Image (cartoon, rainbow, N blue to C red; front, side):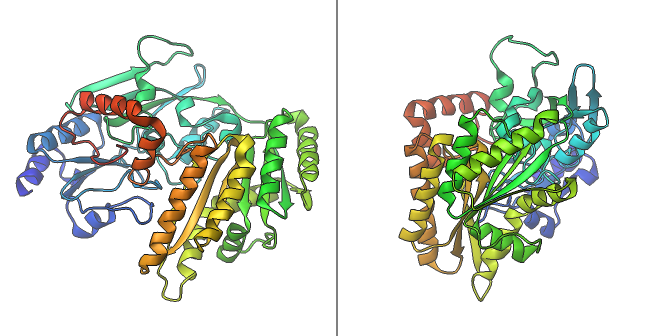
Length: 464
């Protein structure tokens, strides 16, 4: 390892090669709880594509794995280090290279924070819609690597629908440019989409070209309170079948409402079984559209529906939704006297028509395995995040939690869904990916991996 580190220092600026033990420990994992992680030999923070090429070359020479990392906000273990690896952190590659308002594109390095890109393009009256819950800290490179989603996906779609070009350093050290800058383009295989969601297993993303949209019109927001999560699911199906296009349609169950209120009090209805948060950004038609959504919610059994009185209240409700993950982390810790609580965070997506059955299924799983499960999610596109609360120190609690996780996965697939809507596969769902795509799908995946990374050094053990 000393030879490896010496070679990296010879090839890179001194400030790019980091070996402090505390820093190595801090780069072991992303935010996925209860996933295995090793201790890297070194962390490299390149600033240029040429420095990434040099890093890949040195690692290949010594046969050492390379684990790409962004801000490590992922929830599937995709950025977890393996023992003795080179962690290649892209956070220092944080330049917005270009914003082109005429062609409605932006070009950014992978370390640019999502919110920073959104703010920059907003100065040109444009918008980059993908907005994962961690948008104020997660990076564009990580968003692309995991094909991240977010709260506005119900109307605007996930990351892959905006990435039109990439620069990628391959395992061979070659630099590949994919995609285009034009509004249209169908030349050759869609290699851009191949790398989006590949979780660092096929190459290291060093530049991203994204399509932009016009700035959204002013939005209106409402909250609907339900006595059951299934009734909230019925309302979601009714909103979709009614031809409405909310820009946001989020669900919080009682566990999450209580956790958020304890974490940051803001007057949420903690006695409700479920809360739907809906927004529309349809300009002059917004008031009418919001009223129609309110009518659907009432017909589905909402106990109460009320609209945000102004933009400040609407923003507070949206912030409450963004607090769901840290609030549940605190809830899990506080659930046990010795602070040993942890979360197994699921990410299952089903057709909208199956949402109510999925919610009923999760409730039944929680009862069967005698374990707390809170549900939050992007209800408008059928993407739910069951949060399974476990005691890290109790083998029985961990076993019941993992059994509940598998049961929820099984229900989701049986309902025509997928094992991950936006968090990715990482370490957490490798077996469920194999179940979902089958042996032929796995063979194709492995063939692609073998073609691009024959030595298996890029993010080994992830996804496959």
